[in-house]
Structure formats: C-alpha cells, structure tokens
Image (tube, rainbow, N blue to C red; front, side, top):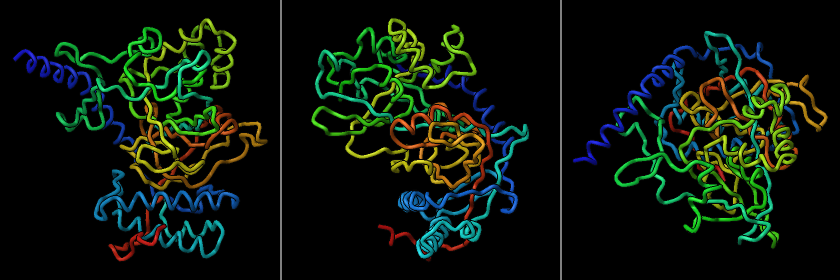
Length: 405
C-alpha cells in the first residue's frame, strides 16, 4: 500500500507542476498559424551544386513515409494533408527532378503549396546548427584514453506521463528506483567524478578528452576513430533526465567570455586554456547523455540518415517528422569564404529533434561531419523565416513508393 500511495503522490505532484506548462504549450499553439503565401513573394535560392544532396534527402524521406499508414494525417493546426497525398506528390516531383537532371525551382512550385509560419508576436525563427564531431577513441581503458563513453544503464527508468495524463503528451521524467522510491538519476558530477557507473560493464568506448565527449553529447552523435583505423558512430540513446544548462551562460556570468563572443569555439578554447576549471564548468550542465555504438550513421530520432543541410531538428509537436520545409536565413560566417550577407534559402526535411529545440520558433540545421561543419554549426545563431510545403495533388493511394530503391 505504501508503494501505491507513493506512486500516486508522485504523479499528482508532477501533474500539478506541469499543468501550467501544458497550458503554455496550448497557448503557444494558438499564437501560431500557417498562412498560404504566393511563391513570388518568397526568397528561394537553391544552389544547383546541391542537387544530388536534395535527391538523397527526398529518397530517405520517402522511405520513412512509406513506413507510415497511408491514411495517417500530417496536422499543422489550421491545415492538414494525408500521408498518401504527400507520398505520391513527392514521387512525381522526384521523377521530374531526375528526368531534368537538375534542380528546377519551378517543379517545387508545380507540386507544392507554400505556407509561411506566422505568429502573433511577429518575431522570427531562431536558427542554430549541429554537426557530427570526430574523436579518437580506444576499445580499452589506457592512461591516455580514460574517459568512458557509457551505454544506457539498466537502472534508468523512463516514465511517459501521457500514459497517465493525455494532456502531458511528450513529457517524460527519468530516474532510478531506490527502496521503492523514484529518485532523480545521477548528475554529470556524480557520474564523471564520483564514478557512480563505474564497474557496471557500461563502457562502449574510451576517449581522451572530456570536453570533446561533452560536445558530442550536445550534438547527439559523434564519429569515433580507433587505433586500428576502424570508425564507428555513437548515437544518442538516452539521457539522465536532468535539465540541460548551457555552460556558455556560466562562463558569461563569470566574465570568462563576453556575451557577444560566446560560441562553441570560444568555449572549447577557454576550457583548453583552463584545465583545472574544466570539470567544474562541465558539471554546471547536470544533464548526461548515454550512447549506442553503431557501424552506420548519423541518424535522426526517426531512424532516418541525416543529410547535411537537408535535415533539420524541430519540435515535432508543431512540425511533424517528415515535414518538408523551406528555410530562409542569413548564412553564418565561416572560413569557407561565405558571410552572413548570403542567404541560406533551400528545402529541408524534419528528420530529428533536440532537447533545446522547443516551440515552433526554434530550428536546428544539420551541417554535416567534421571540422568545417563544426565551425559553421558553432556560428549558426541567426533569425529568419520558415515555410511549410504541402502537397498539391490529391492522389488517394494510386501511387506508392514501392519503386524506391
């Protein structure tokens, strides 16, 4: 009876704490609409050199769409369309793209209606970026490689609150059971410094740099290179349930970095120059990520391979997985020679989500793998517009994607 009483009390407390947040979500949903727009009023600057990149993204998205039920619906509040219509429209679009062997903007206009995402407050979408970092790793612990990469512990419990309260859809709490009590899971400090997960056979690899692993956690994936030359991806598997806190905010508060200059590169540089402060700063973010070790990747949360500049992370309560979007924002400055006077205006698909990507005014662009992608991702913090593309054709079920390889 004590156990039952305790569990009931937990969920009553959680419900009361999150009810106000649920109200905020519903209020935010009402503040956003999708306004049909004339293509002539839209900045659309697709680069022909990215034609093959687009084909890969369309192909991946179609394969995922065909795992859904044809009668399922993509719902955006004031507009919606059937998955079957989306599939067949995309197939006709893809067929003509391949026939022309080039990126034809007129074909996009032929097959898709465009809707601008608008809000009553009239503020723009904030674009950020992510990428796949590289790290040198070992299969065994050594003097150099002594930072563990952990898989998900068996004692980590996830509670999906919508199973108890439908209004709390998408809300999850995580913890551990101790003497019939659900407690918060170990923090980063408890895992990294107090070794709470040591000797539990959870290590899937070892790295030499804790800051590198920290930023792989933030990105959600990484590519490890081992001494024998083999390479494997690590992908986000689970998280300890603790709130994510950006360490850049702490460095700004302490005066180590100015607010204007804070970036991933600046944070890494400061931590490298101040090794005695490294763990303290990292511990400010109590969140900790557990990984899977895999041969292929990178993948988004819907198990679709991410395509550079064509896959985005979004809040899928507002932009369902698989949605086709048109991004429009200033290109971030980088050593690539491009600057923020250039527009980044091209098609992308919702293939991922992220812990910090909340609400319809936040989008995370996947820039690819390696150092240059990381540089661009670190400098992506621009305001812009975003548009939804909806299929024009009403195809019912006469065209499926069975011909997709």
